[in-house]
Image (cartoon, rainbow, N blue to C red; front, side, top):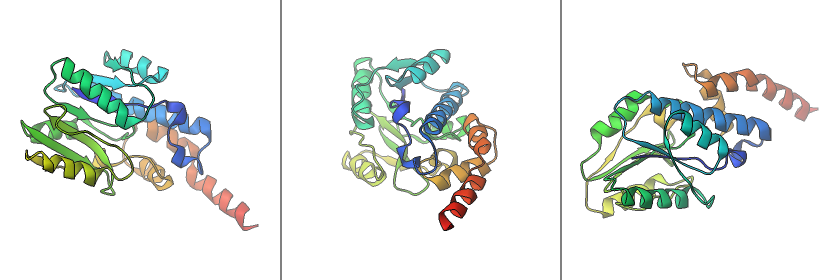
Length: 220
């Protein structure tokens, strides 16, 4: 089962508050969520998908793609994935693959690489570009070890996976590694090849020109 946790999008991307308005942050979070679910929908050999959320936009989007929805309790991504993992075990799922909703350049080819490289029993982790966060986590059995997300989750996840004594594969996948948490991430997203919904949105803001104006005002 693929699990896509989506917290309330009205509270998303607070770390971008210095460069984006509240509505822009919501629009960006919705665009990235759309890009991720579209990439999953285009993956023809994918396992079943469940969106873990209580956000109305994410629920409606999941319905459009005929994805399942597992309601969370808005207590954070870590708790949401724990609840969803328990639900997967109850349904008899042998494995889980957690994919965040804010990696807008993810593509089906790299998702397939995860499935192809994943051990039958064990774990597979994909770090973010900085090597600090976890942008994909496969576990077999589904509850092999608990996932605890945050800014520096990769090394704790790697350590937890190794303590199980089962194989742990680490994959470097460029499209999955790219997220959007810092202003510089937005510039990179706009400059990257492609025409995803989130890319069109960020390009329409012309953030470079906006920054020049802000810098000029600050220097007065």
